[in-house]
Length: 338
Ligand SMILES: NC(=O)c1ccc[n+]([C@@H]2O[C@H](COP(=O)([O-])OP(=O)(O)OC[C@H]3O[C@@H](n4cnc5c(N)ncnc54)[C@H](OP(=O)(O)O)[C@@H]3O)[C@@H](O)[C@H]2O)c1
View 1: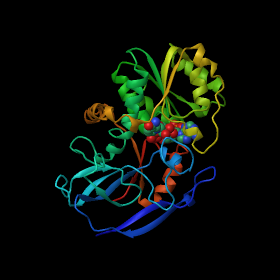
View 2: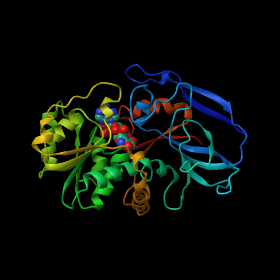
View 3: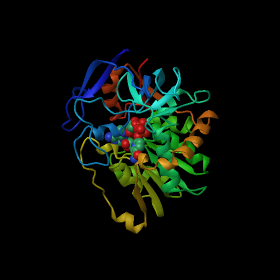
View 4: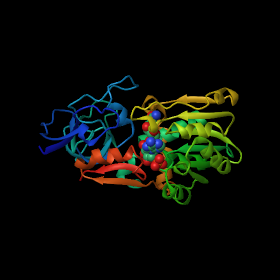
C-alpha cells in the first residue's frame, strides 16, 4: 500500500488562522478490508466553511478534532477496490480530507460517488457541479425564488458559489448584479460570467458609498440577495432592497476570523418586509440531484465556464487556504495533488 501524506489540525487559531495551525505528516495506508476502496486524490477542495471547523465553538457542525486529518471534499480515482461496485480507475468524488489517499467504506451511503468526466472536467465536481454549485442553486431557487425580470445580487460574485449563481440566475431571466473585490474580478464577472453589472466593494470606504454604487447597478432596486460576506456589504444592499425582497444568508466570510459583524440598520427588515433565511446546503440533500443535473448541463453546454485557482501540492494547502480567506483566490480554490 502507498505512503499517505496528510495535513492535520495541530492547534486552534487565536483570531486569524495561520499556517502554523496545521501540521504535515506521513503515514502508511492500511490494507483494505472487505467493502473498502482506496482513492488516490487528484484535487482537494478548499472552502470557507473549514475556517469555522478550526474553532471549538458552538456551530451547526462539530469542530475539527485536533491531530486528525482536516476535513475536505476531494476528487480522484479508485486505486484499489474491495467493493463490487467500484473498479480501479473509476473517477469518484467524496470527502477524503487534506491527504493524498483515503480509504473509504463504500458500503456507507453517500461516502463515494462515481462521476462522469466526458463533458465535465473532474475538478468541477468540487465547484460548479458540486457542493458550491448546489449551494448557489438552493439559495436562488428555494429562498430567493426569482421571477424573470427581477434583480438579484450576490457578494463574492466571482467565487465558486458566485459564478454558479450568475449562470443559474441568468437562465431564469433575472438582472444579475455581482459584488466583488477589485477591478479584475468585476471585469471578469461581466465579460466572462455574464453578470449584467458588478460593483467593486473595495472602491468604497463605507456602506453609504457602496449603496450609491448599487443604486446605479440596480436601477429597479434589489428583489433578491445572496449573502456570502456580511458587514458593510450587507448594510449597503439592505438600503437598496425592494418591498418583499428575499435574502438567502449563505455565508459571512468577513467575520470568519471571529470579529462580530454588527448590522447598521436592521429596521430595514421590517420597513421593507424582507424575508431573511439562513441555510446549510448539506441539510437539503433532497435537492442535490435536480441541482447537479442543471449545473452539469450548464457546464457541459459551455454556459457556465467556472474559473479555478489551483495550488500545487498538499504542502501548499494551508497557504492557499489563508489566501481564500483574504480573497486572493480568483474562482474555485483547489489544490492539485497528482
Ligand atoms: N451555507 C452553506 O451551506 C454554504 C456552502 C458553501 C459555501 N458557503 C459560503 O459561501 C460563501 C462563498 O463560498 P465560496 O466557496 O464560493 O468561496 P469563494 O467565493 O470562492 O472565495 C471566498 C471569497 O470571499 C471573498 N472574501 C474573502 N474574505 C472577505 C472579506 N473579509 N470580506 C469580503 N469578502 C471576502 C473573496 O472574494 P472577493 O475578492 O470578491 O472579496 C474570496 O475570493 C462563503 O461565505 C461560504 O462560507 C455556504
